Length: 210
Image (cartoon, rainbow, N blue to C red):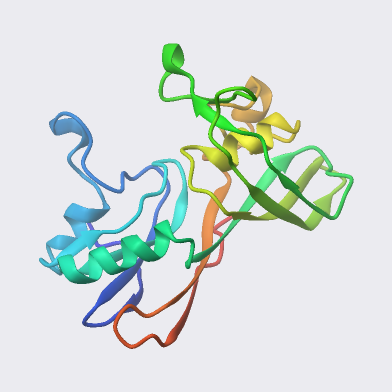
């Protein structure tokens, strides 16, 4: 159980590059004990998770060093003072160069952990996106995604709902798209925030491994 690559480290916080298919926090049962928080705490015992990424998603994950900073960063996320950018490869060639998705989301209780669009009862959700490149040969589009709400599986459901499921998404993509990659092609590539103690601007980046 190796430490995920460190992108940033100081006395207040850590940023690690989470690999795909590793939990952020322990799951249920001993078979799901291995996770980012356990690995990091072996080296930095005061490290506390601030936010989470889906197990299948790779990329930047913040940990606070102690409960005071954890509270400050949690408030920053809740108040949307942390700008998040993801990169994904999706099925199909998106026609427009940019846009936004505002479909409300709710848990699909009979099919947990899946989420679904529910116009009447879903929670407001906003994802802005812009095209980075199009691959005519494969019929895929690389997009940058900016979630302005933090719903579970928001990016995966929003893209599926507009007909451009993320390649390798075994929960939401059609079978041919789900099996077209060995992993979910979704990566948390950038976090922009004010340092919780110094208020210095932090611009943390991680290049997608796909």
